[in-house]
Amino acid sequence: MEVEVNALGGYEEVGRNMTAVRVNGDVVIIDMGIRLDRIAIHEDAEIEKMHPIDLIKMEAIPNDAALSQSRSSVKAIICTHGHLDHIGAVPKLAHRYEAPIMSTPFTAELIAQQIRVEKKFGVENPLYTLEAGQIYQITPDIAVEFVRATHSIPDPIIAVLHTPVGALVYANDFKLDRTPVIGKPPDFTRMKSLGKEGVLALIVESTRVREEGKTPSERIAKDLVRDVLLGTEENDKGVLVTTFSSHIARVKTIFEAAEEMDRRPLILGRSMERYLGTAERMGYVELPNDIGIYGNKRSVDKMLRRVIEEGKEKYLPIITGHQGENESTLTRIAGEQTPYQITPGDKIVFSAEVIPTPINAANRYALETKLKMRGARLYTNVHVSGHAAREDHWELIKILKPSHIFPTHGDLTMTSSYVELAEEAGYSLRDNIHLLRNGQNISVGP
Ligand SMILES: [Zn+2]
Image (cartoon, rainbow, N blue to C red; front, side, top):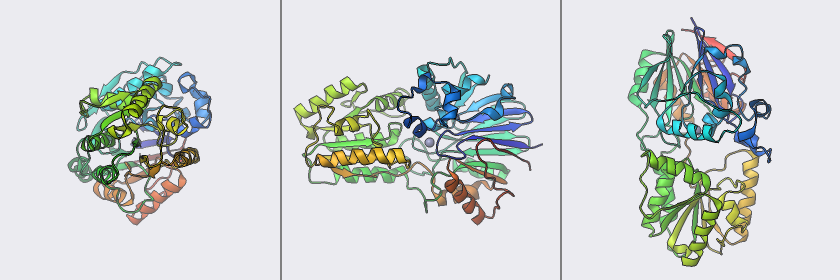
């Protein structure tokens, strides 16, 4: 008996992750993501109303044609965490399969929100929630186990499929963070025992495998943010901070710093409101009593007017727009479309890296130029990544000792760089490292 790994999305790009694993005729899908930069180049695209055929043509969602003959064989859809490049295609593709969607509670809530805004399809797949540490028997031959991981969003897991021919480990995305700001460190004890029991295959992200060394802990990001916000004698200026809305740990660090700066934290922007509200409701984060949260444009602008009236030095707005996205709060402030006037000396803190696509780079360039023209002082890349770097990947290989490795979540420069790393660890291309392109599959056995 063998296990067949089908690469459906994410094997040629950063984004639209989707893998199907076939065991004895039954299929389990892992992740169902979207690729946002392909949406961004079609400015008038209203994804909620679009058909999957058009989105597949745009290369915005995975092409699941390889499963068209065996849709009824799909027994489960597993989503590893709540980033859109892992759940964003659920509203467009999940209804094709009569299978439950399995994820941790935070991810499940974000999936439910995605499904609610979908206009084209009624997605009725049941949502099953599993906690890290739990195992669920999907078919007599396949069980899924959730292993606690760390990343840049609450409640991420490494998924393990137990099959009659061995375990298949899916680590996409992850970092090895021993001191996360929210949640617990990865479950190294379980990972080590999986390595001892024997791992048939590892499907693993390669987004940052070209970065040398290890990715610093989120605790280091906390120090960086605090150093910028608290480490200054110039306390009377306006300060705006922007970061990833779903990065709840980072937002927590920022609003805690606001309390120490004696400024009132404000959460401004639609996606900020949605993610932070969800995290608070579900108990992942506790908010200070004086925090203000405003999502829609009108209430954001009303609050910004109040900031100007009462004094910029009394507030710390945490806002959307670190990639220079259209309609985000920071982009609107830079374009003088809000009551908040940037004056010389105001500080803008980017607690995020520029996502390396030409569109983001262009938007960010325009944004930074406008801000500088108004006299703003910029602090960029006050950030550490949520993705494993080269030596973290080395460590994971050494812990799990997989018989086969499938690098994913990257373009060819990233996946081939992972191949080089695996060769340093004693693996060899085609023998036991498999470089799949979208639409290809390979079967492996013990
Ligand atoms: Zn992710």
